[in-house]
Image 1: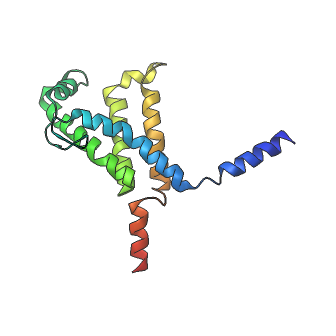
Image 2: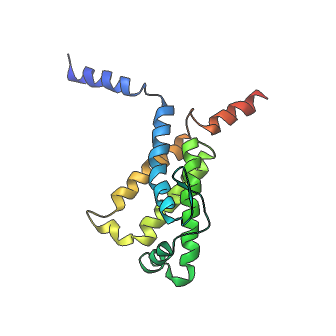
Image 3: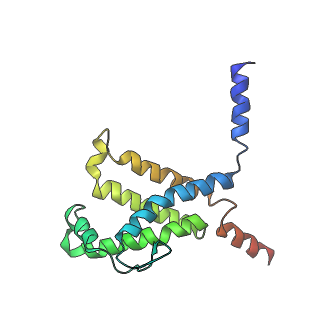
Length: 164
């Protein structure tokens, strides 16, 4: 068999993967690192392993924002609180496909702030964290551009609205 024909067959098979599966994978892949980071910032109780107090961040995280991330003592508490809120509220929106593009945009903005404000020097380093941030940004950009896919509350509610 011709190798180009084999590749064409393979390419045709790949194109048959439903976007709903691709979108769900992108949404979960992008949500997980932010969720884990957000959970690590909270200083509250847990229910089934999920921390529930969104308004009490760990003092060690405020220190990190002030002294390592360069936010300064004056705005570090607010910056830490905003990061914790974003990292705990936006990933579930993304995973469930509810206000999906809003959630994806919020996490993409957070990624940009982390890369360009907190770690700008890493862009020039071959082993810098820019590659990790690109791994976060790529699935978020897919979801922003193409939408949440069929397995989402956005799609469910959209279909419900059209029936009325």
